[in-house]
Amino acid sequence: MKSNLEVEVSHISQHGIWLLVGDREMFLSHHNFPWFKDATVSAIQNVQLLNSYHLYWPDLDVDLAVESIEYPEGFPLLAR
Image (cartoon, rainbow, N blue to C red; front, side, top):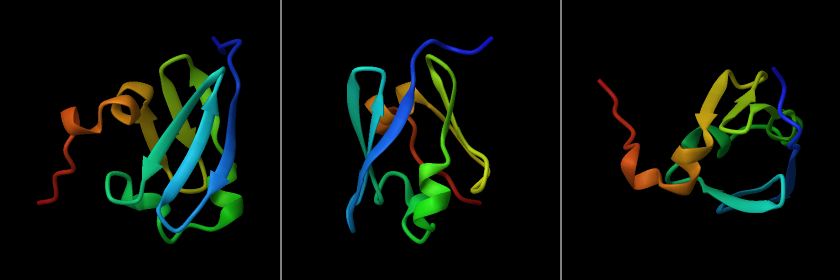
């Protein structure tokens, strides 16, 4: 089921990206969300809000919970 909320990329900078999710503005720093650092503008802008708590960038194959953007310290990046 789709959410009534909408998502929009409002700004892209060398430090990260800003999203508008409904009426909330969120910042995704490249430090916490490195998948976006070298991505194309069109790939970053192609974001879908699957429901009120789940974002998806199909061109980048990146899924993020809104909670992980709000509280990135609770979702550390792990590489093995």
